[in-house]
Length: 301
Image (tube, rainbow, N blue to C red):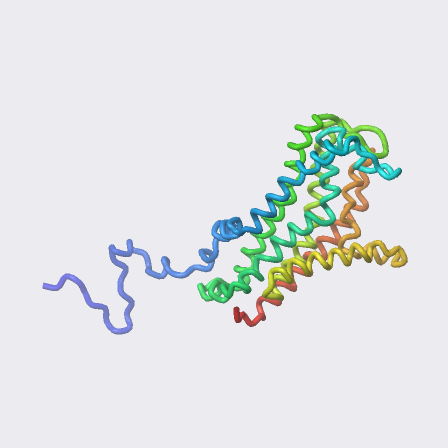
């Protein structure tokens, strides 16, 4: 005697105990399950360039400490600057390390993480296989951007944190001495240090967005990273041309060092506000272009 009923033509089979009473479709394809952030983060962390980049950022403060130990007391070129008070304490040393790294080293690190993420997949001919998983294009780009920005933030934070450790070991803990004279108590200086680091992160947004756009446009990771760094260098060169006048205010790197306004006896917010607005505006436009370009790009690699 038959205890089960065969489904008629056109009928869907009933959900039985083997499926737990749930439709089989629930265990099928879901967009949210494709390319999890954890998987992408692990893939990027295992890359050699990630380890090298963080290694350089961790070693640099100790190299600077060694340079000061060998060279003796720092001396400027007659104009008061952070180098004159770099050895006054850990916080002063951290500010000096940020000053010498903002214009190039941090730019290279951010461009490396954001410029290599998509272009490397295309260079390895694995991008089309990710999309065939299938991972929707917008999600793939979003996941890669989130991970790239997370590593960029970690890179920018790594330098001052290690500089605090190296500075404390070499020069001790003391109030911040301002290049223009006077001191800032440690409690106040820590709050200002948070402002400095926060603004540095915002200022690097334009570098991250530019590198990410180039990563979408080209299949060469070196081209994407080098292109972003090269355009930043060009912007710095144009910024030195005083004949441009107020046009320099619209250059993406013109306000990169505005965080030094936080080292004044009274914080000056004007420069940092303008710099943050310019950086966010450029980043929004560049990232929009990256997503639009990727949606219409013919993926052949």
